[in-house]
Image (cartoon, rainbow, N blue to C red):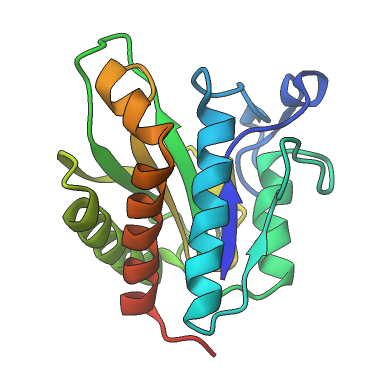
Length: 205
């Protein structure tokens, strides 16, 4: 199992660009930095999720275990390649959302759009994983269910050769949800939700 806590890229690297998919002329920045406080929160959730997965017998790799992401060239291509080289059963990208509206709140799960030559080999399994993880995470946290979101423009999806999803665990821009996400108790709830979804998707090998 591959856990990818988002962000944590050094700003000088994050400002660089990379192609959104193999052979693409369309480029995106490697890391915009995320919402304020997001990188720390999602790292804490990833560590807790790792603990729970290990207890269930999974082998777990994390793209970063500390505040800084340094693998490969430091971008989302590198994050996908990290999980690809480990032949992960699933890449779980862990993020927290931000919005111009402080009222926005809830959990959503992103999955790759079907793109020939890029995601056609992982599309069906990614969608199945997204459905399961969204359902279990909402069930455990009781957060607002914002559903599934299909994305064609995420570099980390388009370079993935293993099933991949991205869970937006809540909004850092919502004062109540930010406090929850920064609390250890709620982080454990999110971790339990993610773990149950993973377990429903695939047993430990």
